[in-house]
Length: 123
Ligand code: HEM
Image 1 (cartoon, rainbow, N blue to C red):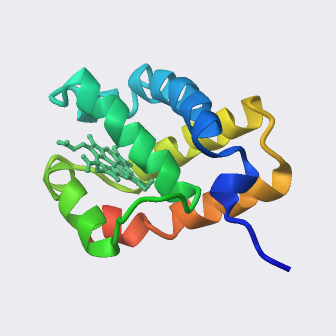
Image 2 (cartoon, protein in one colour):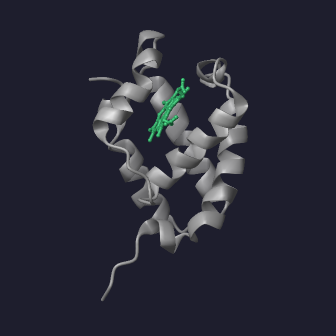
């Protein structure tokens, strides 16, 4: 049997678009983390969210641990820590649940995202 990627299983590009819209709103209105996005322009922010979701879903992006480290190094300097990582993860899980992604797919996505913690936090 050919195993389809999680990205395809949740609906590909259209599903990512829907997830991005809801997740974006949550992250940018969350007082625990929204300040990290202050200096990022809106277009870039949306682009980032799209890449983020595609990455979490194992879609067509080319991000490595090294890139994750580099992308967040300036945020670590500004105090990015586990509590912020947890807040982002919580917003993502809430988004997926709201959009009725299956329990198994949510679990799989959260595992992938969780696996980036050490890189994102520069440890
Ligand atoms: C949970 C795992 C995370 C993943 C998979 C992830 C993914 C990414 C990716 C792929 C980029 C680069 C986009 C680009 O190439 O421009 C990025 C940038 C960024 N991330 Fe994350 N991220 C994570 C956690 C976080 C957390 C916890 C925060 C802050 C609360 C955060 C805030 C940002 C910001 C502000 C940028 C943009 C940096 C800039 O352009 O100046 N990320 N992230």
